[in-house]
Length: 239
Picture (cartoon, rainbow, N blue to C red):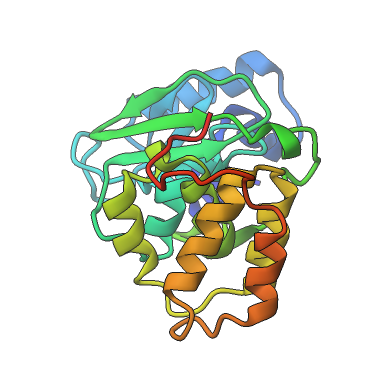
């Protein structure tokens, strides 16, 4: 595959992906090609090992790179999460220039342009799961593919870690924008986290939106069985 053919189908790519596309050639040759294309303004370096294609006719210093594609390529398992996932799905009250993502890998936060990219830890009960606890989908977007949590998982994640959802008002207003949730998926992931406070928060939200989200008694009963033994304030931050 030629470089141009590769660039046409990989708007954001890693050094490893480009090297695999060459089929032959030494690491030195791959590095030389990348440097040449960067010098010619065809690609730009986002961070070490991560690049973006500059569209024909665009200027390197003015090109807008899709932040969700960047986050997805930050690691081989990087998954857009929390408020950023809801924002990707078009379900946030406020728009942020910050993208959080799950990964098993050890990655430092980084910035590209006006966007900050922040890896976050997986909740400990699902951290060792190969699928990170599920609720992850790959969506065609911006000429590439974004790995992102579903609205159902994002809902639970922001209520489990409200500091990553922008606080209670932002979370509530954002979740109000979601017209439908697969409630069985919501509850299954909530219970997998094995956290009574999170179960109570999800139960409270569903109870408040019982009619709009078609919440059944059985949904609330499943969560109620795992609620804290003592009353908790909604604003208590999960530790």
